Image 1 (tube, one colour):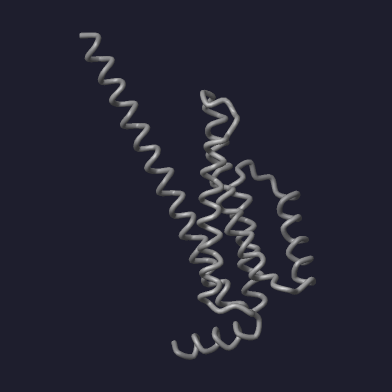
Image 2 (cartoon, one colour):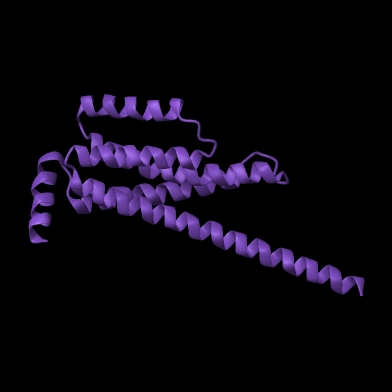
Length: 170
């Protein structure tokens, strides 16, 4: 096990100008700023608030903004100062974006993350890949919990309204 950590440490130091703590702080700040921005997006959303489809799209877009903020930070950690990496990543992401039919924006972002993390591994940026994977999974888990909580709240609220209507009928 110690050998594995030594290999990760040796190969990461050659390909990354940032420490693991720096990577974590960059991704944390991106998460916080993305969360603030996605919240402001939700508040200022100009779509019809009564239409269920538009509400669903707004929620999906809000989470997409959050994931894109973290993804943008992760991309620049991987690319660093290397122009060849930047063009390679741009080409890979454009292939996925324009050649893959994904109706949900979140699914497109998840595919982008897979490419970014794969590129980090391929460039021997193991710290970036490991911390980035954990961070992306954490963000996706938080989004899942928020969505689950909102659904439970709506279900309970709907049940209370139905109970009140039955009580009024009697």
